[in-house]
Length: 416
Ligand SMILES: [Zn+2]
Ligand SMILES: [Zn+2]
Image 1: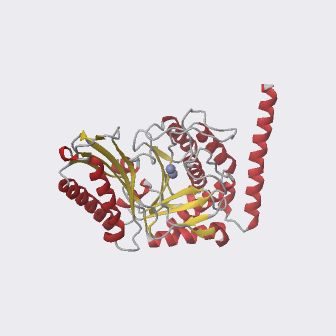
Image 2: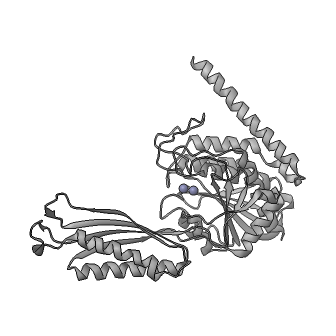
């Protein structure tokens, strides 16, 4: 029984890969492709992606994944491999001619959640899943590295392939990679994120300026004074203080932030009290704050701190506040964005390029702007559940287009 099942699975799997290849060939024939397109290892990209998908590891623990990536890069023969952090890998391809230095980044971490797909290569690690598509990012960038490594002789300049750990968990892995000093001299950074609900293989150019949001968090403890429910004059009610704070915080967006500056202040947690006739002595609040510019981010933080300080004081309570700045917003560079669009159109035709709306999520790719201008884009992966959903899947036919766009973006940048 088991053997029959295995046989069916094997036939299904092979059929899947063959199907992808047929689709890929059809895509290739649809327009006059550059000569290098035939060097894209389409089937290996799918194989790499499935291996990584099946063996997911959470942020900062990408030990097997980074080893796998390192081995694949080394097998290409002409890529220098280094470790800027324990579970990050950088591959450097030095072209035969001098020129500029450009980097493309993929992230490698998975999420602590149970996969609920019925893929034959579903996660083997209980409670860990590649539900954000970082398996696809890693496989595509390996495909890009393999394709370019075969063009070393005609390549001017240097390409950095960044396989980064821990995108999902602040403080994130990008900061470690940057602080390692390994990216000195890089003049431009590109990145690509898979996104469901857009046609598979279509590249979405995100806006110039804020392409994602900055995320900050606060945890607040309001310390009042417990009392009998019938004797409020002897207590300080932290629920009343908290309610006043929650109400006042709504005015940060509506009254302080310039209209048109996308800002969100969400109080996601407000817990206090155990009994109807007891005035509690503490209340706990937590909030998530999204902004898109450094100026507004700072302004919102200052206003929130002022409101908490003044209201607790007015009510005679005290407080403990932990305000945490996580990732800033990605700020897409205008010239690099135009470059990415032009190259993506050249690689895939303009009918496969679309204007993607700003991502409301946050991404530590934003930090690479500390070194050089950045451009982040999306890749459609067909209809399906959102990123971070236990049923998240990637339509693999999209991956070849992702590699094509990446290679073209890098080649055009170096040849400009
Ligand atoms: Zn994610
Ligand atoms: Zn992601």
